[in-house]
Length: 592
Image (cartoon, rainbow, N blue to C red; front, side, top):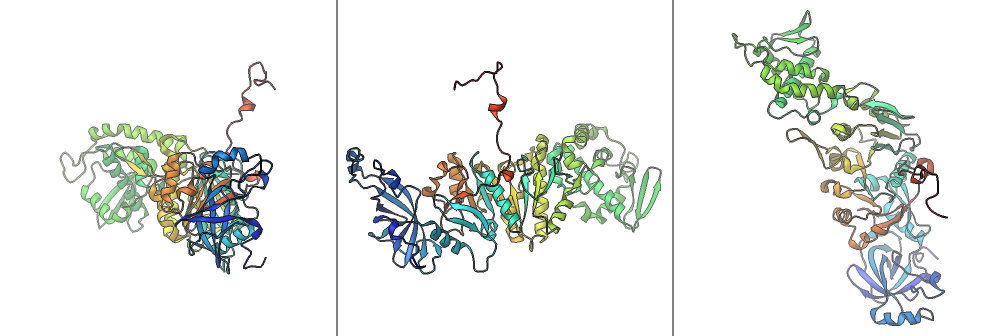
């Protein structure tokens, strides 16, 4: 066959169109009946891709229904053992158009099929070539290999990273559907083509499964991993309040004032133009602009008995430093500074100075102080407040600056579930990456962030009624990261728990088996290209099979993801009951 006729093979004719509607067509399928002894020769079944020959163009379609006309059904049982005269009828979903001359697939139906047009089995190599021609530009040399179009031999599928990751990507599937395999495959492909990716691994199932990856871990490092912590000075003040949960009426305002004072202490220490003098355990900082402010040996601002005007003047001078949104102060001194804040507004005899110790607010703050000291010293929160291990921000910067490093894996396996530490920590790292993106760090070095178990970290708020923070870092990356070169791939088995405004930002969806009606409806609402005919295949997809949907694809495509090598497959299996559950007497439970 030459190039202009390669799409149509007369030997693979299935039938003839008998009915045409705006989005589908019906045809006779004389060879579709599984008659006795001829089942293996039957052709034309649900899921098959077909070509409809429309002269200068070909319409790509998919068989979505096969049935026997109702009037012929009673005679079928009598014919099935003999030469069957009954012909099945099929319905085709019209997907896209292929120009015979260029063999390029274009979205939509640009030619109208007519009754009498022939329908042929879509040959794998031809279909693959047409789709690849539509996806790959003339200058595209980099492509991500996914696997094959399901059920068609030789229909390999590769997609340029711009069209797979450029508008963000979502991987959805129930347990056992192959979601983790797909994630592993994409990461392996990014490494192969010379890209960069950061994998957030909440469960630790990818540890040691990504060859050549730089592996970091919070709280406790495993084999081949480097222990890291997130520097407390980069935590947002909102996250700190959500973690410590001061009450709104007394503890919250006192804690905010203490943070303000500690920021002032840091600014005073950093200003070399000030006149300093150390007297015992106290250091004074003098400026003609505001007067004198005293800081004790713990780094806390002293207030009791000190001039109010001097403190107010200093806060005005360093107003910019005091307006920071992060915890860029000595967090270990926070409890002592709260105690320093618990003073009377003015002195008993001198209204120009702060008064002495006030037991009223101090008593209100005692529970906060005790809770704070406990949490700051807690081993569970050393990933945020400790100094063990490396600074993860520095590690990320090194990764971005090293062209030889391709994959950065960050494990949250050992991070505590208490105090919402996991959610806040991952959200904080996401905020840091978003800050780098807004500073144009990824413009010439695009990075893809993979977030597994995304439903745990998106669309939620942590804290209480007085102090809450939205876990929106990765939602913001999905909404604005694309223009900065930072894109995200979210993977979850519960798409219904991902915010709708985040789902709407995902350009490419890889949908594995989903059995929950609400999950499937969520996907359908989020993606206009996935109609009910295509979505009907989702519950019956096998392991590793998925529906690939995206604005750059000619139609929703069923694909079989290439299985990763055993050494690269994530450890997502459940417990081995056969090995560990044994009767006390050692006998077999099942007679063989």
